Length: 156
Image 1 (cartoon, rainbow, N blue to C red):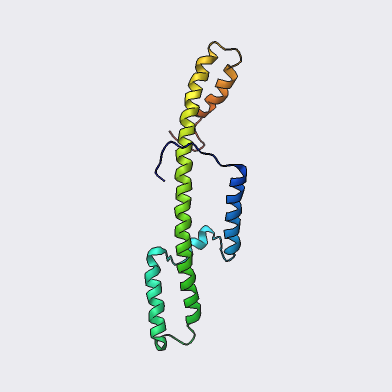
Image 2: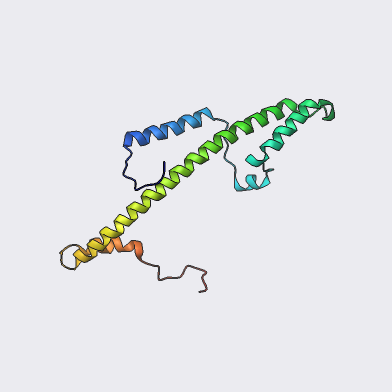
């Protein structure tokens, strides 16, 4: 859907249904792992661009089994290639959805921020004549205050 000024909402029930759908996905993919940064660095990278090389290597292994040593697990290789292809497909869809969620959050957040700053301007004006508005304005002003203290270790 092309971007336009968003005027939508999600009910708590809809949010819970989406979260339940994510839980279902996790249940369907119990094989998922979480790697540490060190583990990520140590692994041979085989992203979506490498999938055709991996698939072609499997095809070559299947067509030329005599070239591979006897201890080469060709069936395990085939399972790994199939799982890699399936996860690449699912991952592409998940990344697409995540990008749409983030773009929508960014767009609606921008609208909300624009409206909040407009309201803040009205509150600042009202604080000049309306008793009790000064604390509201001071609370809202926290968003725009710059830290006067330099971070530790800063030289300038």
